[in-house]
Length: 470
Image (cartoon, rainbow, N blue to C red; front, top):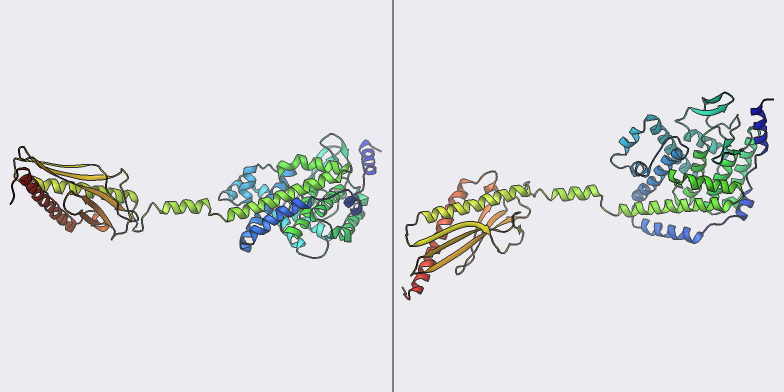
């Protein structure tokens, strides 16, 4: 008899059968206060949301669990960013997954279908059967055709029998360098039948879902009934019980791998509570994850907010604010030019005239705004030289419609010392794409009126200076 055979017999003999549920329950408990607190928060939030929003949040948890279950087994690598991208189905999730290769994509899809299968199982009233577990193995491993086997000549790839109990021993070398025994091939069917019987028991069916999930998971991996895929099946199987209780799986991420394996090793030593505590923490993590997803659903998406903000940069008339600004400044410059031209026609060597564009202050009417460059005015001054020293000053400030359509007004709003405030108005469609001919005619008439009014006022002031009355 060769050495490998001797080792197999030794390892087979070292197999320690899984505990009965009665024994498991006697050594474990669940912090139900935390469990109820987390669930109460989730239920309270879910009441105000549609079933579709709740399903979407639970789907995030399912996708995270399905993605990372393969990473825990070393089938591929993930990080938090990748898991978030795929689980939340962000805009780049398909591209990110495609970068991992077609095989990883197919593994993820198979694992996702497996969690859908578990969800379907969870909706049924009957206990989990051996047939259901074998079918779950088929779903989990659907994308996997082979598995690695250690032989006397080294590792070899062999066809993976899906949904069938192992025909070769699958004992492993642990992280500590020791050999770990799973159920021998010849006792595996009986052990699986015993596990199914325990899952049908009244004590198990009345237990807390976290205790159920931890027990089913642990006992299954103790047996390790399939040639490969046992860890993925165990995690999906455990989720059947939380699905029944709270309609969501248990999310165990790849970053939990070390404490996960350590808690299983503690259970192997009879410290079952350590593994129950681990599964409770992961269950609460999942509830918190779904709860946060619901909270996020109550807020408007960043994309929609950005889209709404961007839409504000185009007015209801289809103009950009830059176009409105440019049209307004062109209008102000035209007012400046027209008033200057009107003054140039006046013959009066004793008059001092000035027309400028500068900063200024003025009241902005409702529904209007200042130019981007700040308040801009056309300042108009006319004065008489000494000794008949008098002066008249006016300014016309530019205001622009906030949400301009074609019939909205661009205004130069007057501020005068004696006569009522004046305003010259141009419609947007008189300014864009170019100033209309009618507007230019009106503008010239406005400029001549301003000059006439200011000169008449200057004449009155000059007479007052000289003590004369008409």
